[in-house]
Amino acid sequence: MPAFRALEPGNVLLGLALALLSNAVFSTQDAIVKWLVADFAVLQVLFGRSVVIAIVAAAVYRQKAVVGMLKSKHKPELLLRAAAMVAAWLCYYSAARSLALADLVTLYYASPLIVTVLSIFILKEKVGWARWVAVFVGFAGVVVAANPTGRPDLMPAGLVMVAATLWAWAGILMRRIAATESTGVQMLFTSIAFIVACVPALPWIWVTPDLLSAGLMFGIGVAAALGQYLMYESVRHAPASAVAPCSYSSLGWAFLWGWVIWQDVPERTVIAGAALILLGAVIVVGSEWWNMRRRRSGGGNAV
Image (cartoon, rainbow, N blue to C red; front, side):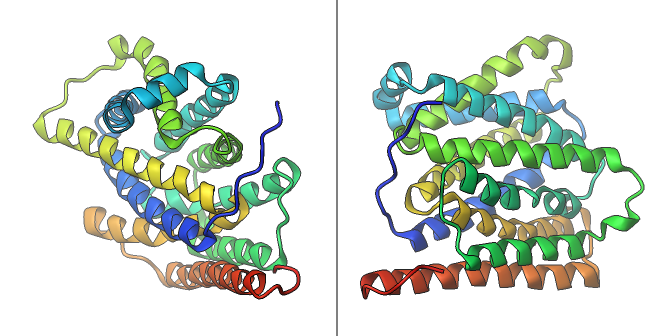
């Protein structure tokens, strides 16, 4: 893989805020997708979502994104990332048919831990003790909330773990690609790759949606476009290992939507796990704020 120049230093707290907002948007998307995959094939939902993202990206970025995509010197990396995301999508939302939304999102949170580990070996990022503590505290909260020992069917859980690993790898690739490629190029390239991957299956899986379902498919496309924009922008301002723990915030949104849509009531273990996850987010945000103060005052090493 070719070398990439380092990103310019940015506002880390802005990057964390964008990451938190991105996860809120993606959590809403997940709830709608879980609703849709009960009646539609995952590839059909993914196709509709990707078409909307491509239209939004082309409308917002126009010729700049199209020309940038065609002239990109990193098409293999963009394609590899898109392939990883397609595979992750298929695993994740196939499992959504069998798992409650809170369980689905909870099991996914092996991904931030994987991102932190990969960021050390691939991106050569320096991960301080505070980020490690934040990741492990957050992941401990996930385990407590999930209570996996009572899970009778391990196949859906296994699919989510595969998806988490693929998304972690895609996140690392995104961090590398973001050093040279614009957000518009990444959004347009990824959505077109998704469309190409889905089209061959459509004649065998297509189910004509009613007006409500069509509206929901359009809605997840808009939500995904917004979420991707926020996600791509977040890694321009903050290291991957710092952004990763912010994704734990999606668990709270998953509990909320699970209760609103499917009347899933969180148990005490879920509340305890959510508290640990919140503590992990507070640690990483607090450490980044402290690091910024030390850098501005010419202090010592970051935590």
